[in-house]
Structures are given as C-alpha cells and as structure tokens.
Image (cartoon, rainbow, N blue to C red; front, side):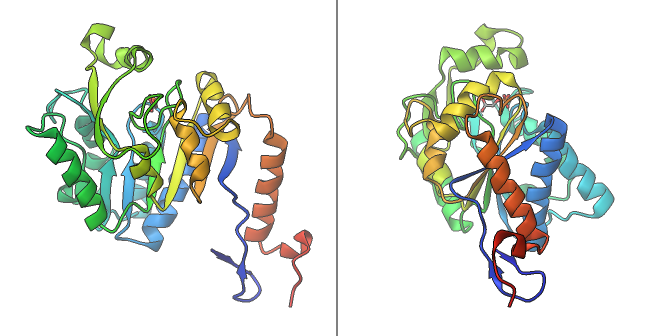
Length: 287
Ligand code: PGA
C-alpha cells in the first residue's frame, strides 16, 4: 500500500494482474529488481524470500550483496526457499543449485545458513522430501516474495509445458529444450540431469508476491505468451495471470513482442505520479 504524500490516506495501487516494468537493459532491470527485494527486507526483516537460479537473477544477487556490504542490508532474520534442484547432484556438486546459491549469494551476506532451504537432489524418499518442503514453506508463514526466471519454453521453476497449474513440489522430467538450454553450464547435453525436484505452479501461486524477471530477445516470445496469451498449462508462467500481485521486470529485448506495451508504460507513469504524491494529476482529489 502507498499513502498520500500530504496526509496518511491510502492511495490505490495501480497494479492489475501483471505489472510490467520495462528497463533499457538487464543491468538496470536487475538493479530495479534488487530494490524491490531490499525494500521488503527492510520493511519486514524476518521475511521469507523465494529464490531462483540460472543466469537471470545473477546481477540481482550481485546488487543485493553490494547493498549488504555498502548499505548494511541485513539478512540475519531472512528465510529463503529455492524453487528447484537437479536430481542426482549432491549439494556440493558445482552445478547443483545449492552450490549456485552459496557462491552467488549466501556466502556473501549475513544470512543464517539454517534459514536457507534448497530441495535435496539426493533425497532418499522424494515423495516425503517434497511433502516436507511444502510443509516447511507453510510453517515459515509462506513466501512473501518469489523471484522467478522464465524458460524459453515458458516454464517457471522446472514446471515444464503440460505441468498442472495446481501442481505442488514434486519430481519433474526436464524437456529436451530445457536440457539444451542448460547444457552450457554442464559442458554438454549428455551431462545435464534429466529430472529435477521443483516447486509446483500451485506452490508458486501461493506466494504473496511474484517478481518475474526476463532479459534478452530469446525470452521475448515466452514473455508475450505469459503476459498476453491465454492461461495454459502449455506455458506454465501464464498461470501468473491468476495471481494478484505479479511484477514483471523486463529489459527492452524481452519486452519486444509485447502488444500492449504502451499501456504498460501508461500504468507505470500513473504509478510514479502516485508514489511522488502527484495524485491530483490523476484526478484523485486532494482533501
Ligand atoms: P535462465 O533460466 O535464467 O538461465 O535463462 C531461466 C529458467 O530456465 O527458468
């Protein structure tokens, strides 16, 4: 909620389903995303963050580390849940998502390691592990802000096309497109695991707020379908249209196929006027 600059009246938030913010490049978009995360951590020090891996959030994590070091952004009470993990990789495997998180964020901030949760890719009983992961999210009070990348096939987490939009944390078989996309990290398609443990679409939709990030022209089609296409299990990110509070932060290239981008810019302009206390320019009367 934002309040009037002149008095304490609550002003309406203009975000509808998916609030679309387009920045000139991925660096600017990442800084913007980091500001969203930092604002929550400052406002609610014991917040629960949902974290993603992959190339997309890297610069966001770099900026959060900088804010921790330069501005004292405090993660000591924060709890995190990661979206997914490859099956078969131990937590110290260089390509495991646990290692990714340690190297790219956790080792550089003051988070309590016992408050960081990543699914176990070598669980002995995956069904029980997935159930417990869901339970831990629930027991923590639920995810306040879930960071999401998007696959070129429109997946969120490892919810490949065809995943039920009500799905929960479970084992998932990766598509050949995802395996191809991720082969660059493993040094060859044949080395990429075929299964992952992933939060479900239903799990993600229960987060209080989602921050969807997409950078680069190779994401443009998936983003257009996600934001402007029909809601379909064939593009699991499109389920975000059903969520009440999604902010999509895109660079120009990822936004290039959006049909209604002029309107999204209008909404952002109005949002900025509200936040600057200029609500009279929107016809909201001063009292
Ligand atoms: P990327 O992956 O950030 O490496 O592009 C995103 C995803 O597959 O979800």
